[in-house]
Amino acid sequence: MIAYLDLILKLAIWFLLTSDISPANIIIGVIICVFLPKKLSSPGKLKDWYRALVEVLIAIPQAYFEAVEIMLFPHKKEKIKPERVKPERTPGLIFLDIFVITFTPKTIVLKYREEGWYDVHLIQREKQS
Image (cartoon, rainbow, N blue to C red; front, side, top):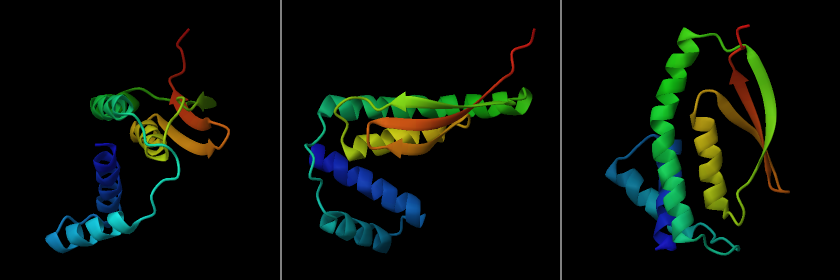
């Protein structure tokens, strides 16, 4: 099951890069994904993939809400905050974590550090006093 999720993730990245879901591109994407090198790390647990999928689904309405909020209210305060990578994450799950953080308009991952940290740039509203 994990192998299928990994293949789906690679295909999703392929479709995002090519912006083409024609039959020929699907075939090319499947061939490329099958021949890409396999991970050397241990496969992720199914519950980790499920949680990551839920986080992606939650991030979609959150992104719309944040986009409207940015348009209506100024966000002039910037901050770079280190965030810890969740324990025992595979490269695919780390990619999904970075995707979710960057997908929402108020945050973007600037750097992933091998020690297990993300540098996250975020914007915030200034508190009215």
